Image (cartoon, rainbow, N blue to C red):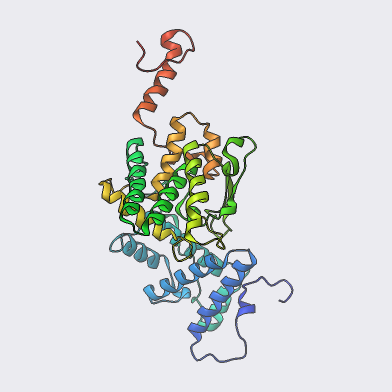
Length: 375
C-alpha cells in the first residue's frame, strides 16, 4: 500500500493501463473489492461483509443501474416495493438501508477517490451521489419494532406447555419408541430457554462445559451458572459473552437429571454439545422452532407465542417476583435498561400490587405494604 492511501481506495483497487471489455462491470467489482478491504481493515466479521455485498448486488439488479447512476429516486422506489408487495418488516428495511447507506457514503468519501475515478472513466457528472436523506429513509421511532402481538406466556400457559412436553416423554416411553430420548431432551431444552432467559440460537450452541459452579449458590452444584458464549452480537462484531446465574431450583434439577441420566443414552460422549441428536449431531435452531410450534399448536395456544416468548416470560416473571431490574438486565445481556423494559409484560396482579404499594403511604399514613386483598 502506498504511503497515505486508505485500504479500499480506488487507486489501490483499479487496474491501470488495461482496456476493460466491460468497463462498468469492472468498476463495480473494484468498488466492492474496495469496500470489502475497508471493512476488513475495520475488523468486521466475514459473514457481515458478505451479507452487505450481496445486498448491494441485489440493489444493482433491481434498479438495473450501477452505483454512479443511483439517486434518491431509486431508494424511494426500492422502499416502496419492500413495504408494498414484499411486506418486509420495518426493522428489516431499516437494516437494509443502513448497509446501503454505508456503501454509498464509502463511495462519495473523497478520501477513497471513487468520485474522481468514475468521472475519469465515464465522463463529467457520472459519479456516486448521496442517496439517503431524512425525507426518504425509514425513521427509527421506537426501541422495539417487532410484532405488537409478541408477548410472553402467562403462568398458566407456561405450565400447560411444560406439562405437555413432559407428557410426550411418557407417551413415547409407553409406546416403546426411541422418541422418548428426544422428547426428554426437548422438554429440558425448553425449560433451559425459560429458566435462564436464553435466545434460541444461544440455546442451540450450548456445550456441556458451559455449566459451572457459583460460590454464591453452592446448593446448585455444577449448574450454578451458565456461560453463554454465543450471545447476540452487535452489527459486525463477534458474539457477546455473558454469565447467567441460575435462579430457578426446579430448572436446575431438570438440567441435572438430563445431563446425568438422559444425555449419556444418546451415545455421544465425544460430542461437546449440550443438545445432541440421535445421529450424534447438534440440535439446530430450526429444529427447536419446529418442536415448539408442534407443541404450541397441539395445545391450541396463540400463534403469537414463539420460542422467544419463553425469554420474554423469564424477564416478566422475574420482574413480578421482585427481582432487581439491573440484575435481570445483566442476566439477559441487555446493554440498556430500555431493552429490558421492552421484554417486560407484567400481569394485572403485579400492577395492582405495585399500585397498592405506591398508594399505601398516602392512604395508610405509614410505609407498610399491604396486599390488595387486605381489608
